Amino acid sequence: MANPITAPRGTRDLLPEDGPVWDRVEEVARDLSRRYALARIGTPLFERVELFARGLGESSDAVEKEMFRVSGARGSEEERAEWALRPEPTAGIVRAYVEHGMHVRPGPLRLWMIGPMFRYARPQAGRYREFRQWDVEVIGDPGPMVDAELLELGARFYHELGLADVVAHLNSIGDAKCRPAYRDALVDYFGAHEDRLTDDSRRRLRINPLRVLDDKALDVELAAGAPRAIEHLCDECRAHFDLLRELLDTLGVNHVIDHRLVRGLDYYTRTSFEYYVAGREGQQEAIGGGGRYDGLVELLGGRPTPGIGFGIGLDRTILALEEQSIVTPDSEPLVAIVSSEPDFARRLEVAGRLRDAGLAVRRPLRRARAGRSSWVATAWSCATWPVGSNVSYPSTSCRAPSGNRGDPAHPLPSQVQWRPRSVPTPAVSWAPARSGRGSRSPAGCIGAATTGT
Image 1: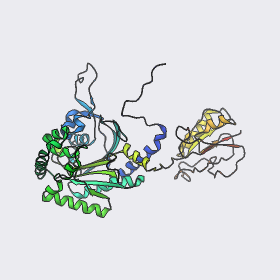
Image 2: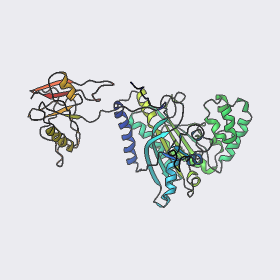
Image 3: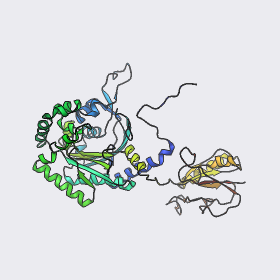
């Protein structure tokens, strides 16, 4: 027997039992994207390394340490091409904005996407080398109102999933006018305490002083005494930040000021934010975050254009839901077509009519027989439709999906009976569906019925 091949370190497979919670999380993200009038956009999974080096900064961890580099096929003209799997979506979206001349469209542009990102980071709980993210970008609006709207959108996402105690950490890091003075203040402060810095922080101090505050190993007392960005804001940035906080209070968005929050990406200006579960800040990574990037479009070859966005890690969100024991709602009932007669064509015909009515249908291939084999044939069913029989079947706790009953275009066939489980039905044998991880029965399916014809 050949040795089995396992998934790459830092990745994972999503198994069928993982599907319901992922479907729920992505469904909420897609629905909110619609309700906030966002348009879908998609970009390639790989881009030129130059895009991320220019947009994220040569000194960022994403470029220096965490980038998956790829090349063309061996022997091709692109064999030595400098490409990379995308570590984050914003740079690619802005590249598409510039490349396709989207600045001529009525603005501001409000965009969203869901997709995989890749970072060669040390695997840990909630952090994978391939991870999925919901990303939202608004390009062309400089005001604090859109900042507040996106912060409220992220908070609403967690609320609608049922995740409790989510708080937004907020800061302003100024703009091209006032940020240089803040950088100088950091250089003076940390330069006087260089002997207390890690090797990584000493290197960052020379390249990008703000990123010293990103160092997880930074001395706590040293970090507490560091200059604060909001104390060096110009009048315009101060007014922007003050109005943003006022709007967040009005919207009821739970937030706190985090003076160490400067973000590791070089294109951020003014507003920066991250989402945490309250009380877990020192124990886990942020479950989402973003900020304003008013200089990125110009940096990538476009006209000066303001922008703001966020990315929410779906893997980390699901981990937080599991930690709070948030139960995913059951999916719609599944119908199994069961018959003791070997009429496969008839079963396919019945299945097609039920699917026309909007139901999820499974067509077991085995003939229904008494005992264990009949359970195997219908172990996934919450309701059944007999073929060649007029008996009605109990549906347990399942019910017909809303919108199907009475639909003149796709009425439910008359043979399908949705009745309480307690109603006895002649010629029906009932077998409870198995439950738990590894079961062949989906969550919410509590039994199956078969005919005795």
